Image (cartoon, rainbow, N blue to C red; front, top):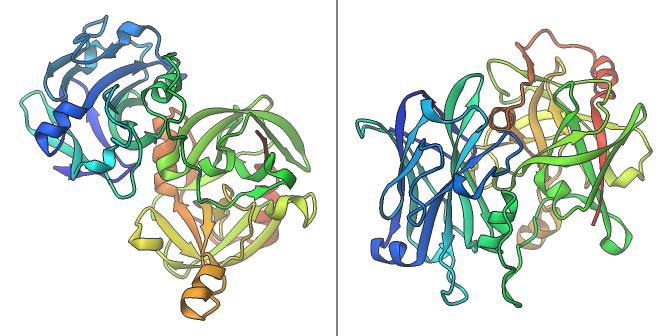
Length: 404
């Protein structure tokens, strides 16, 4: 049985599968939490309230998803799922009416498992519970990609509870009572404008139809999202978000002139040369993209996080969401953060330099697959001149400007 980390997926194929949700302690889990399955269209929205399956509504309107038993076991006939359904989300929420402070963090374990029709286990997603104050969550999802179903670990939480989860899927529930805890912000590095009403980062185009990839923390809480480069200006709308893995997919109203290409085959290697292209410091360094180079210094991120890699190319606030390119110009990561130099200096007396982190390209590709976006990829080739790579990147890397 394959154990999944957030963002990873497991090919399923077709036929019937069983998805189950459980937690420890068992009695408390059943008493305090409720699970459900939501059938979603390609836009990530629910088409009809009857597309929500739970103990209270044990069957989808098409019969493809059935509640099989408590605390949360569901049978899914993948061959019977209508073609209009692109994703099937497995969700969990604290039951209404429980005392304030009841969150997922009070449980010692929460897990989602996938089995075939004969009850043979296929994969397991043990939810990381450290510092989890959420009261509703998208745990996992089944999604179509190129005619094949896949099972993906998500772990996207909503501190504002069931109403926020429902609104995410296009349903409207009563507003939470005054004083209910609000969703927390991100610790990611984006550039904030005067007064905090505007902020910026970097993104890059991944599809000719204008799909743009960036960090979730770059666009979090934004009411308006714009993009610009020396060659292009456009408005963006949020299409798909994964706060757990800090990724967001946007779509431009007019596509940029270029499209990035991901590396196919071996991922980034320790010591190889990489390049960062982005818009740091909110344009204070000029209106065009800034380019820095360095090396991959570790294949593991902070806290032994295998989803990230470490690199030495200098970055500043505003670089978040930009591409990390190899010596052939293909994407090997998405720039996400840098080490807090001031805090480390306070703790150790040392002043570290150029310790930066990027989300690995494999995780970003899995995110794009889950969103149904085909991306370009090619095998790594011979090293090219940095000037040629930078000139090419100018066409697909953009400054993301947000207003709240």
